[in-house]
Length: 319
Image 1 (cartoon, rainbow, N blue to C red):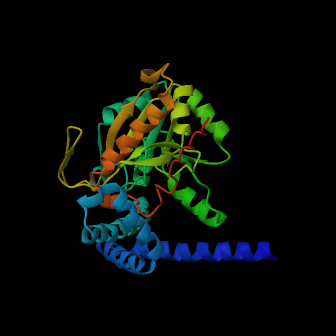
Image 2: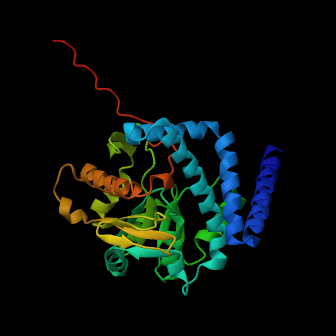
Image 3: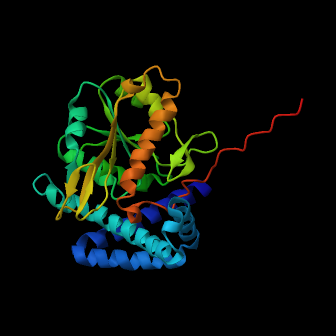
């Protein structure tokens, strides 16, 4: 009985989401953005727990650079950004195509990204929860590149299938974070291109590297796989930007998002180094931080990036 109720509840949630998606898809772009701002205001008011997490994260990241009023304003902006991103993703399949892609995104530093995608070597595309990370894989599929993305399977099977239909619409293939490791290894042993989000807390057993001046537990797998399969890493961010400059690239309107190459890391540079795993992990984490600083209000400060901290070293017993 419990399983039947669970399946029924999952399907009911799925139907509500489909109704929500249909409503957003019939709205004009400006009406959808107004809805996003209203939703952001509501979430800011009722989501007390994540609001506090975001404020705490910003204190860790920026310290005295932001006063209490500025931190609160940035937290509000975070909610607005991610609600806007949600309605954009819903409308994207009906608006974004090969003939108008420059209206929605532009690629900076793309020579190394494209060269990596066309190379006989495998490629790891490393990004974080910044801007609109989903649009990067979607766009690469539109351009005809075959890529794979590592993602966690949703508990609701109906929602999981629905989200997969969006992510794989243009040819990108999603691999389960748990369960598809053998396929991940096969792709890296060949010439596959795999994208992964690399800014999540890895627990007490994770590798601690510096992120915004504080130790952050980070998964070792990215660096270990890069070294084992001699796979280069391209570290990208996908923020929405107006006029700005980054790594020598000049940004200008009207593109809404920029797919920016923050760093290109070749594991051959670290061959034979005893600290290779930590060095690579620190380097791509620093590259992510660099692009996050361009638009900090578009980073997902609502998750506990510094949830775990290094365990204090035990004092040596006196002789």
